[in-house]
Image (cartoon, rainbow, N blue to C red; front, side, top):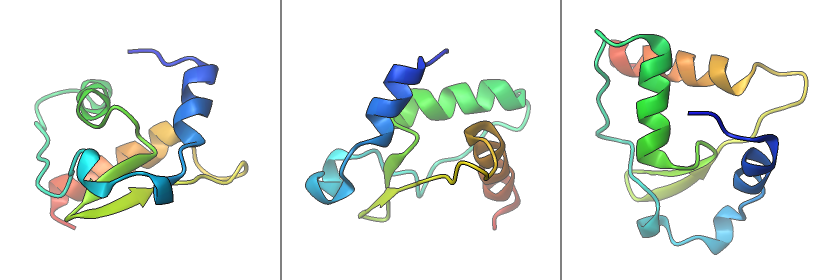
Length: 88
């Protein structure tokens, strides 16, 4: 699953305050299959959430933003998946 820079920019520009939290996928109960590769887990995550910048956790809309000098989205999602697997 490849997203263009234009698609990512559109996802990134969503105003979380204007989005109904109930319309966003809730990731609080999401589980990950550790037998899949990191890339496959990220692809499945993206298939579920549609927009990696905006989703819901326990009824609360969440928007993730990244600093230009910060880690890549892939690194951040990988860390997130590892923490979820570990139960953190």
